[in-house]
Length: 300
Image 1: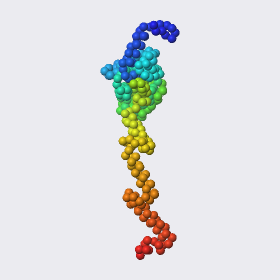
Image 2 (image 1 turned 90 degrees about the vertical axis):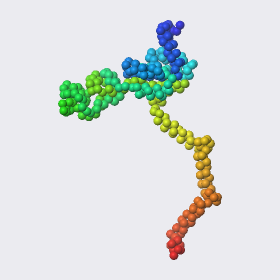
Image 3 (image 1 turned 45 degrees about the vertical axis):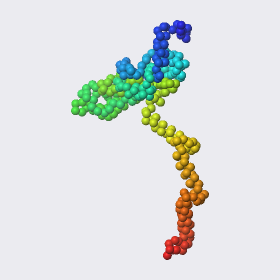
Image 4 (image 1 turned 180 degrees about the vertical axis):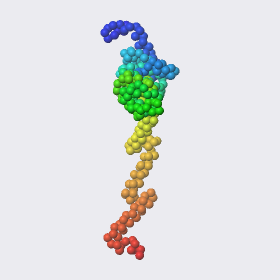
């Protein structure tokens, strides 16, 4: 019988729940941990419906999730490291889908919702300038109380300029939440966000999963260019470098032959041009000292 750290028997239902989590963790290739902050039951149900054929979303106590991850480390290498990320409001998302594709699906599935009163704003909230559609009345003072500049025009209230009413980390009072709702402003984005994912022994964190394909493509191109440059300078012959190495060797050999004035068919034209240029330079310096030696005087 399993016991707690205090030596008390673990309730059977908890043991069963943990075993069920372990079965799911072992069944699926990709194990994800998502943030549940601000996620409502309606949004969660909608996402479950959308992913029903490709992924399972499992919500349970953090302690059960963490212990289950620790207990499957023999079958799934490094899976126990995911337990470090089981903090706050989290849920498991289990799938055989590519974790990058899953992250993009979750990001695209996010929806907008109204700001809740007596909460902290995660984003900057801006009320845009424009016609509110409200006739003059008590609402003018409500708008003024949250710092919105207004004017009355054509029988309706207008907000005269874009106004920041909350910054990230600011407390949202009830008055502000009410006005935003009346204006139809839904500034808060809600949805599951893939914090970290496990895929065949790899731990992929949010900063990796959130990158766009074009960003990875750019990094791959830069890495390829750097590796190619290193291989060429290190004289490592590969199908990609051999032509560049031959061109480089030919250029260096030609330059060496020119500087050594080695007369061969490839260098002879350049040697003659170089000699002609040097002779002309000498003639110009001599004529500067004695005009009678200038080329024009000799011709006459």
